[in-house]
Length: 332
Image (tube, rainbow, N blue to C red; front, side, top):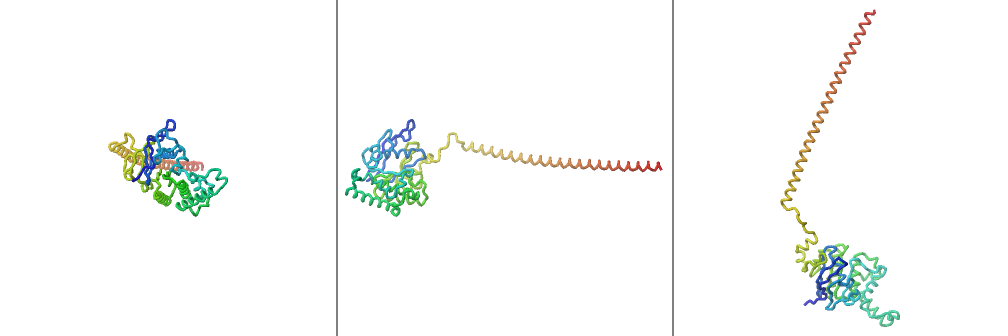
């Protein structure tokens, strides 16, 4: 029988006059992988921040294993909830091993004086933490890069390192905020297998993701947030078939959208405009032909006039020549 590890009741988060999350009830059971999806701006990360103590909910409560969580991130981590972030937040200039060791701070009991004096208790705790960190690096496939700087890792391996650091706090519930963002299909598949392996360790998982194939292949249940409210929650099959979910992602038809009759009228008008364009084109061609014919006729007429003028000029020259000959004969 599954028991709830996380219960959020009537969680509301307001920022001034803006309500980012409104009256959300949410439960994660032990051994479950639960997905949280919704369009951009739906309030998913804000809800995550309410669960992990980064935000103090305006209304409602968040309880882990039956105890209401204090609104302090380090106390939430100490209680048993760990998370990764949408944007990678590693210590870039620390080694891979050191980044994982940072995640152990809530599970060590050595204080300031023990760290300064470096007594036997401190050295023992340090050895245990390092051994556990190496186990986790082996688990995520980064043991051979433990001495590398975090900033030198490829993007997909930086995501793995974040998960290893979160696991170092020994959580009972792991929250993953878009763990496959920016990954190629092969890296996404590797992450999916890693999440299944984490669940097999007995850790419940809550995932925010925009990759629908990843979510629906991975999760036992999926909840949908739209405009800060929970729209539906159920199995992958139920959520995928819900028309409201499809409308939330693809949009709804606007009021007064043209129906069949209006569409037919539009098509008829377009056909009429096309026909009119054809007639106009034919008229333009005929006009052009007529203009060309008229031009040719005008050129012919001008040519005829020029011939007549040339003939008359020739006749005048002949007549002038005859007159000149007559005058010369008389003189002789």
